[in-house]
Image 1: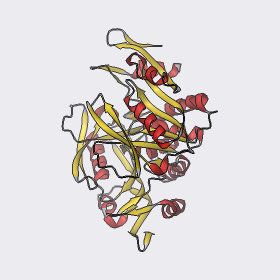
Image 2: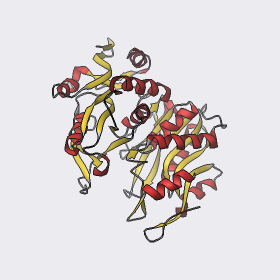
Image 3: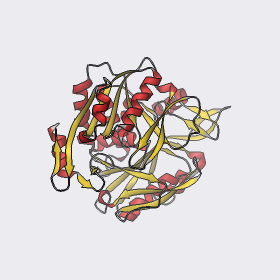
Amino acid sequence: MVSLEKKIIAEGKIGEGDILKVDCFLNHQIDVNFLQEIGKEFYNLFGNCGVNKILTIEASGIGIACITAQFFNCPVVFAKKSKTINISGDVYVTRAYSYTHQCYFDVTVSREFLGPKDRVLIIDDFLAKGSALEALVALTNIAGCELVGAGIVIEKAYQGGGDAIRKKGIRVESLAKISSMSQKDGIKFI
Amino acid sequence: MVSLEKKIIAEGKIGEGDILKVDCFLNHQIDVNFLQEIGKEFYNLFGNCGVNKILTIEASGIGIACITAQFFNCPVVFAKKSKTINISGDVYVTRAYSYTHQCYFDVTVSREFLGPKDRVLIIDDFLAKGSALEALVALTNIAGCELVGAGIVIEKAYQGGGDAIRKKGIRVESLAKISSMSQKDGIKFI
């Protein structure tokens, strides 16, 4: 998505520790008009797949998922992150690793809101090593949903998480795929 | 907002500890079509106030804020919750108390995204004792913004947080105001 690549180059900042900061339009301040373009693009990719539910994870996936869901005319479910293990029986739970916070956390969804009748599209802002996406995929498996695929705004392709998940036969579509990133050479896309 | 009151009565559940669960349409599963009605109503209330930024707090405010922002044609900024005190100098920070988790947490916004040029509308899903809303109001004060008011989906009016903030001269508009709530007598609105 050319307009997204241009926006990342114009407004993104490369921070220490391989961080790409796009918090001016994607995950702190949110450019809602631009999210509409992103949502439309996800609809172009997955609009003919019979999606009846969009699954994302708090917090920064929620805005993108909600704007995108308007094109699919379906509800959003956002998985919750929790450090506690005090989980009641009415939720599906799986575990993910946060490379940012260097700890494991639980990812939960209420059983009420995911089940065998759901054709699920996963939406998230970032895909790097793939831990959060793998957790969401696991939740759809536990819940017995039909997983249509995953739509990601920005994939750090050089970290390999996306391709590892694609190798399992899951359709992963990323609107911008970064092949390399450094303060010296800037951001390169595939 | 009559359609919201009807939806709360039809789909909400009263849990122990004075909890109103509306996670089937508002804060776990999100009924995006219904959020559009809510966003339109906020626009009816605040559309002539020159709002150029919507401020909310993660996680459950984000979806409502993003859908609402489409009507105002402005960006969203969501404040972040953090238990750490390891805050760098480039953020505004204030503190709020979580009655659910019984602890204080920091509420932060990057200085980049709030300032004296902003005419801010605060949007959130719930208002009870008012701790989160007071923290957001404090952030707009620290940042020197013009605060237009706050749009709340559900106010537990009997907990008094909303009126305490109104007494400070801040316009708070809640689309459903609950006057009492119990499993025996159900939910009553003002």
